[in-house]
Image 1 (cartoon, one colour):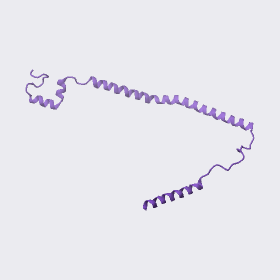
Image 2 (cartoon, helix red, strand yellow):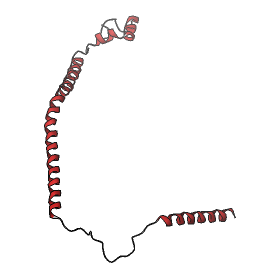
Image 3 (cartoon, one colour):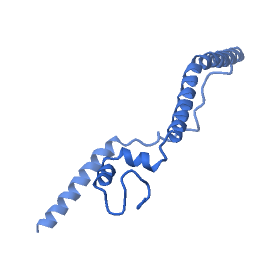
Image 4 (cartoon, one colour):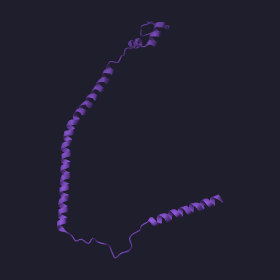
Length: 138
């Protein structure tokens, strides 16, 4: 019973919404005798004056574009310090990488002497090793 009342309520509410929107709907205007054309006649002077205004507007737009292009050269000169600083940072980072790679310790004895755990094991004198040597039994 509840479902039938609920479905009736849905149908009634949908009908009310449609009735409300039906008043707002607007169709095409009523049928008339052909399309309505503007009543004014062609005026050549007005047409050519508008064309002249359009030409002046196009020329002004082109002139603005030329000014922007010449301004771009100026802004490129202003941006050049930024470009040089960025290039300098890239070169410095590359040189730093090369320095770190070349200055890395490759000697196992030097690496072992800098590690506290290895120094402690060598100080204990594990069997078969002599402290301070790279190979066992020497």
